[in-house]
Image (cartoon, rainbow, N blue to C red; front, side):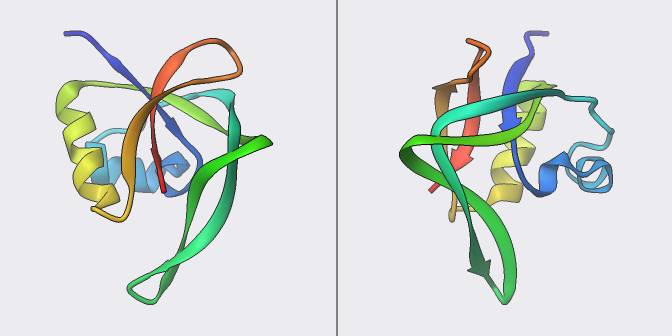
Length: 100
């Protein structure tokens, strides 16, 4: 099984959310997402973080190794409010990220 990398910076960092979404807790590695900034947006009355492209900015987060099935579960969790793209992290790793 080939694992995918997913950069997370919000609720998916939390073990209790990972357990609900993926059915397991995933120990991630710290990394940074250059060229993006983070802000809060309102989704159905609750505030959630989202990243968006912005030069000279950097977002802290963690990288999770997940399966294709888990990536599909993350797509459902993140809803159509977020887009998923492949990006380069400060470490040089290529990973998926959900953004606006």
